[in-house]
Length: 287
Image 1 (cartoon, rainbow, N blue to C red):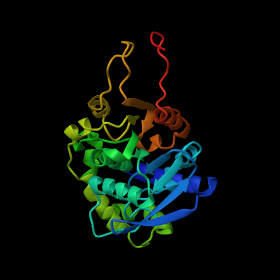
Image 2: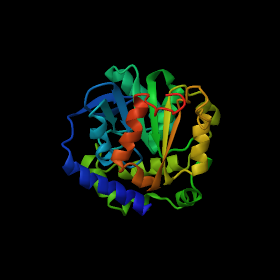
Image 3: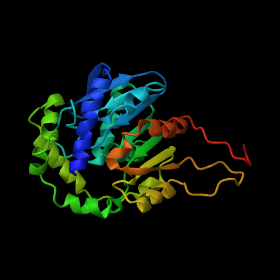
Image 4: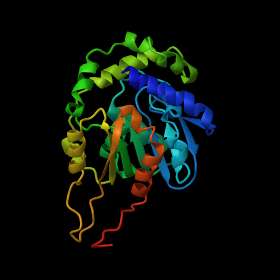
């Protein structure tokens, strides 16, 4: 856990100086004031951050994606500059927030890239609001709470608000937060989210949008679970049979822990950009 949180802080310190942030905006969504930033031009792409993160701590992936897309980077409930409301944080609620945001700013349909908590919310967005999702790139997620690594499951049992408040993350939160004293409440909600039980196999089968699944080979979900997700989405078949490949794609990043995934910007771009453009390598048999 210390590694996860200190890595997020490192992103904040490094990239806050490297990029001048786009002009931020706020819109009322489901009773909260949601903060978001728009950058670039082209087809709309919504970017969703992980737990305890914000737009800044997502790092260089946002400005890089904005070189070819009109990126809408959101800060989810009680994260960053978005206000909190009297409601638990659940993946379903976060997905509904994204859908409501799209309606509020006039986005009919968009590509979505989500990391960790934001990726699971993106998965639920495709389930609950399929008409709003064109392509879905998901990094470091699970579709079933049994898919988390055993070490993470054990760690969750030790989580409490005090351990988070003792970390530098608590002070960093204050620099952006709409409520500088709101971190304990956010931590409690995120701990509750960590304990949420879910099993969405049948829901995943209903997703029609093309999905790119990205995972580190030492990520928070087991590799077996990630492969199962890929197969549920229609992947894992043999190519070179004269038939189009499935729209689902899978990428496993080598030597990559959970927090290492989002920092590999060039590699992520090499995976995400062709996916969003529906590009596939030529086959020697069926170019």
